[in-house]
Image (tube, rainbow, N blue to C red; front, side, top):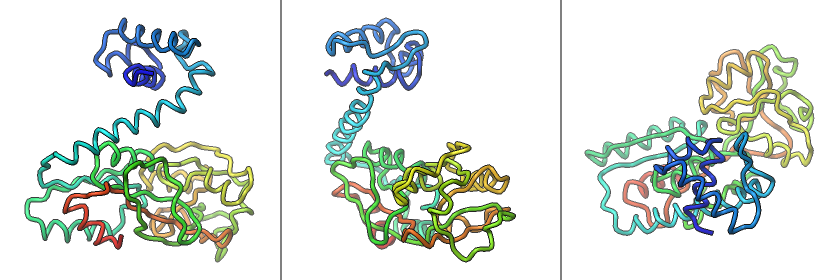
Length: 293
């Protein structure tokens, strides 16, 4: 399968439109239609329904393969480019909301003081987007977070020729409205909250799928979806009673109208991991050391 055809297919699905995909890719709409037709001919099965535009069951299956394949191709290009690229004094960091801590801010400040002229860029992204940014060279270093057993690594998307290492572990907490009946408890068991209302906020809190896996149950169903990376926005939703969220105890501090109660069981921590290329540039190496990696 031609990667160009796969990229066109994924773009059409993501945009839900042949014309919008053509605009994004810089093709004519006719060329996009030809790409899809060629791919369907190659696989001998329809991949897209036309009205409205969306993947067929076969198209859904192909998406599961196409997205990681295209990401690995982009990652390979970025990895080879690093061998010959002469980059300006710049450090781009992609991090999850809970990873933007005072420790990171201080480490960046120390690095800038020791590296005159260093330009620093920090972008707050969801976990998968942070991984993708490092893989494709859009970021030099990523900081991703999630729930895990103490000292266990996070379960991350395929990262290819990257290095992952622990940066920090802290208590995991459940964020509740201040008036919630359980807000005064010293600790909470996740299993006891399986049937509570939850907010699905995979880019700013622990994904609900991780909570289900940790408790080996099928609860933790979302009542509200929150697609943002701003912790304050998540706190506003929790405070108003839309649902609960699990996140790092430190990240939960200061969110008005909420209370963070530590998780006592199962035994979990909120873990931050660093992702960077195998042969990082000087500023990246210095930041990894500063963060304890």
